Image (cartoon, rainbow, N blue to C red; front, side, top):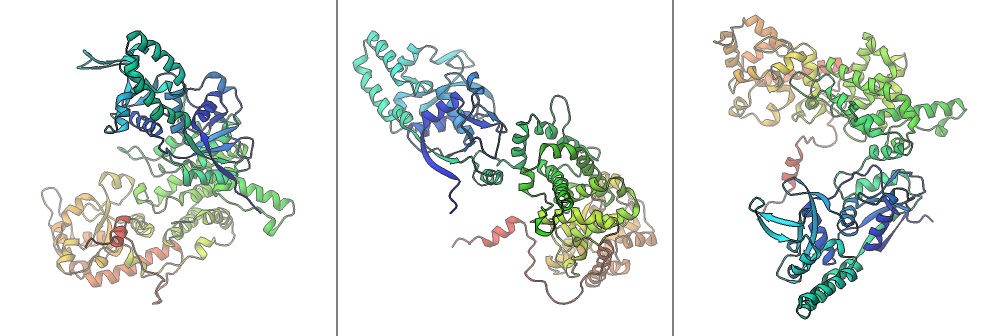
Length: 636
């Protein structure tokens, strides 16, 4: 019977900190060197001083499948670097590092003030305040500058001087660095107070301070979840995602970084750059970025996306090797880019494919621009960039041929209008990576095309920018050379950014409301189209017949437009001019729905479903706030 892969036990805090000092307990090398800010350190000290819980730690026994490169806790002595750790601290790094530095290390601590200023601090417990039940314990924890003198009035006035042990005794300020050295401090205090002649007066206070506060540090127990050496890589990744309490959960990239570091490869430098070199993160962000903008269409490609694309190549190689060895069916390893594949990606495979995959992502940016998708905001699916880049990396220059580009576009739009890349996409990505290149060479159409059907009634329910299909219609209109109502310019890359092009209503919202038309109707993508900011200002909230008259008449800043030319501009947006001029909303909606449907069918290379069998479920294109607002119970 399978047992738990971990144990939960209380560990003595002092022993844990001593393990940090000796190097028996270290950090995985990917953990950042960081100590909490000053206020959080004070809160941590206050909690331990009251024997309050500060949360569990999580460790991983070394010597198992997950072979992370170790690194001592920040501030540990040099000999700790040469020690072979028995365990690695996976969760609780900041708590343990902070406690180690303020208690064991006996050195000034580098931290940050609430005003985001880097400072160096010593920490003390104000003995009298700590013993006063009316005082908040955190107010009894004092941080003092490196010279141990607190000054006010721009440094002119000394309000507390703790620069000597004798001054600490006189002010009854106990250094946190001495919490595990009570006997030493006590003997020094007795000698000092005897010399001062106030031992009888102060000793009861000091004795009570030890019993009520200092003793809590010596006896403090920390719950530790100890993962055994047999814990799998995937389990460690899940642990970070579900349990990590130190901010952003560590992902597969951080874990792969640590594993590669053990072989001497700095994966983080590949991605983020360093030593004057530009990493891939910056390279992708700057690719095809427009003037006046710092980032382009693939700026949001994550490091795990990049590894996922490489994993597709690596797992395909494994499958091909198995096929060559005579294996078949379930004996063949899957082609995949899932998390387990990332965690199992060998360094040699990463290095073999990194340049090829990098080029694939750069080509993906060009491909998306060809489809008139210029901004991340208008990108239907971020997740679809991964198979697109992997496919382009695989086929190389073959994508430059018009026939192949047309097929790639058909595959891309099928994914968009089939709305296939919204969730649980690992299987879809792997399948497309295998099927699309084969299709380009004369094989069967990929399942993303063959299994996808667009429903004509879907156009009526596309109302939110969050919808991939909504964004897809906008891009298709621009790709079909739609012209701005006012300027007649096509929406190429330069015009798009120079004229602040966005999706706007054709029958204005205000006019629709006055006609008592419901938002569910007029907010549909059927009633929207790409227009420049200036054009939308002219449209205002009036009837189409009125704003068309304005455009034809012109103004001081806009020359008049011939009616026939304006009709041509409208037609480029798949709008029947006569319906717009007659302010025929219902006729317009029915006519344009058919035209947009034809546009989508052309992009997907197949007919849409026009039947009357309703799709299962109810469309809900609200944002998260809208959903939450509806679910919230109103106050009575």
